[in-house]
Image (cartoon, rainbow over all chains, first blue to last red; front, side, top):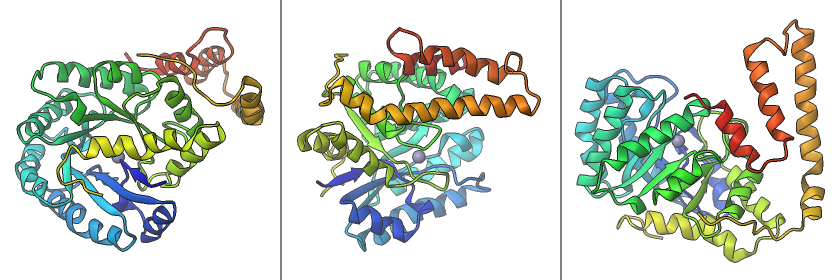
Length: 266
Length: 77
Ligand SMILES: [Zn+2]
């Protein structure tokens, strides 16, 4: 079975991780733009980062026959600075023109502040105007429920949004219903302690048959591992699910979402 | 949303599969409370431990959607 990893930060991973992913049958991965672990000191630093995502990573992935795609954005953690954010947003269209850029992401909220919401809405507007996919970051831990509601409320004001082109990520049991009921895609991130475990992900897949669900490992420089995606595949197998259902979750669903971008080709 | 449980495994098979995981997670929680108490924290008064005691009750109550209610109880308004 071929696997698509819909959310991973390969900039934080070694080339050996690409090799392991390839050996586990990952054929494509998507890298949203995010926080670097420290606040960048200028718009130029973001420019360099976006250049890395659109030039260096696709080449590194190609050595292992993995297609590398990315989303470009001002991430929520650094969006508190409105002037810096707007300077960064001004050159996002240049990077959306690159071959492997399929949309805007991961935008969203971090501490659920008014400035974060402003920059979220300005980037949603850009995505709608440029007809781009949107990959949305929902806040961590105790802020997740409120932040997810705030983002859903904000999107309600956009009658011109296409919900099928929007995915809410880092979804857990308490945020899933509201996202699916609004018609959006939902992705579940497997993280050892702070997000989902493989058994909980499979619980949700079983409770919502046929729903617009994806699973991602979201590997970055924190405690995480690209192989958690494949642990979830194994968890589904040992829970008695057949290959057809496995393929639906780990290949067909991300394929359906991503191939709404004409650039996504496997 | 339509919801049903489409796991291919029987209840007994699921319990066999996860019993030791669940036992181990509960034991870790019990040992951690002992550890905090030995270090002088009072589980009845320390706010985060008090919150954990509250949500631990959700784990063994007899209502559905325990994971969802657990996460909701920890969410900021
Ligand atoms: Zn991420």
